[in-house]
Amino acid sequence: MEVFGNYIDGKIDEDGEETTLLSPVDGSEFGKLYLANEEKTKEAIDSSEAAFRKWSKTTLKERQDILSRLLNIVEGKAERYAWLESANTGRTLRQSTFMDVTIAIEHIRYFATTKEFVESREIEHPEYPGTKGIIQHRPMGVVAGVAPWNVPLLMAVWKIMPALLTGNTVVLKPSHYTPATAFELAKDLSSAGLPPGVLNVVTGEGSVVGTTLSKSEKIRLLSFTGSTATGKRVTRDAGGTLKKILTELGGKSPNIVLEDADLDKAAKGVLFGIFLHSGQLCESGSRLLVQDTVKDKLLSRIKTYMERMKPGNPLDMETDIGAITTKDQRGKIEALYNKGLQEGAKLYFSQSLGSSVPEKGFYFPPTVLSEVSNSMEIAQEEIFGPVLTVTEFHSEDEAADISNNSKYGLAAGIWSQNSRRATVLANLIDSGTVWINDYHMISAAAPRGGFKDSGIGRELGLDGIMEYTQTRHIFYGSDENALGEIARGLVVANQD
Ligand code: NAD
Image (cartoon, rainbow, N blue to C red):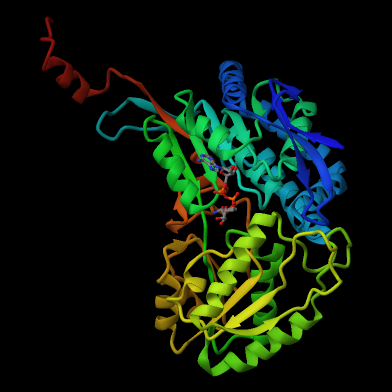
């Protein structure tokens, strides 16, 4: 059985409480894990702190050379990464191959080659003629990344790459449910030439490892991705220290279909929006808002396409709909779905899984609930599973009101053939990302993050990179600086 444990100071560390990882595909034993405790986490932090002194003095080119070598390694092992990701999370092998691993490779390429980030720039000070300034974007120090279980490889890439690029050292805590690809990436970074200690990986319970990271005075920035409830907890725990906190949290994203949409495209886009990775994506379009005049037509297309989707063993390349990553999560989906029915939502369509999926795995059928009012719990709470709610609206203003009547503000989709109309609506939506005639297209060059309870701060793009830096200003004085001369004279009289 493969071991996915801790990676400390450049070495695999198998010291810790041993547990078995169960694969959501069929409930079989997938790997062994050694859970880190508080002491082990502190060891990882100390290792990253010691490594920071040298790493922060490397040049941007030296750092990007290491990321480029990593890129070659990951490209060469794409199939292994895809298999590990699917066996560990239950997402379909087709999705891991053509989305997660493909996008992870493109995102590593972005960080390895971007010229957008410059470490320093020169300025003039308008008040002080002749003087010159240099603005530097310096690393913060030891950065902690805390990741959820749903997209482990991309999460590891997003937490590690911008931090290393900007000269920080990192302690990464993947979810103890899905540590496989983060662990693999740490080993591959080491092969790419990353010095020991620059990246440490500790797997373990959030209440132990996560809390130790939140409370550590040695960590200067904590980048957390997970649920809103845990994000608030982490922010409270870290409150006694002065670290910077970035939070990428939950969502209940609307996917809005206007009456002038290409309904065939929109139906496919809505299904892609909710059923990719069985709805277990933070930005999943779990609320379909459809204009009343096209509701019936759209729903009938949605049903037709759903009847063609193939649930099955995620490791089979033919499968469209895979597993739910953990047994607990399946229970949560079921409970909220039942709550929706009690609240008055109607079961419009649910696929039958039957014998198409392995008996002992964790599965939930793709489901559509209609006649959902936005005040119902099923429309307000994140389900993080393959359940789409349908709510109708009569005007764009109403669509915006329904969209924004949510504590979340992570993402939204708009389907319309009129780009101007869609843009006017996009401008009314309180969320960090709005896709027009598309969904789930996450770009390394574009910052992503949430409004409201979906989080604070941005990941990816130049905005995301800059989050990992602190600014230093160096001022070069000049004899031409008349105001400086006068200012100094206020304190020290000129003797000449
Ligand atoms: P979670 O909040 O339960 O856990 C996230 C991480 O925090 C895990 O590593 C967990 O071990 C750790 N953790 C738990 N308790 C902790 C504590 N007290 N202190 C510090 N760390 C602690 O979330 P999850 O169930 O793993 O993931 C699903 C959630 O993540 C969903 O809400 C989803 O929307 C969100 N998510 C958000 C984004 C985004 O970019 N906005 C992306 C992916 C997932």
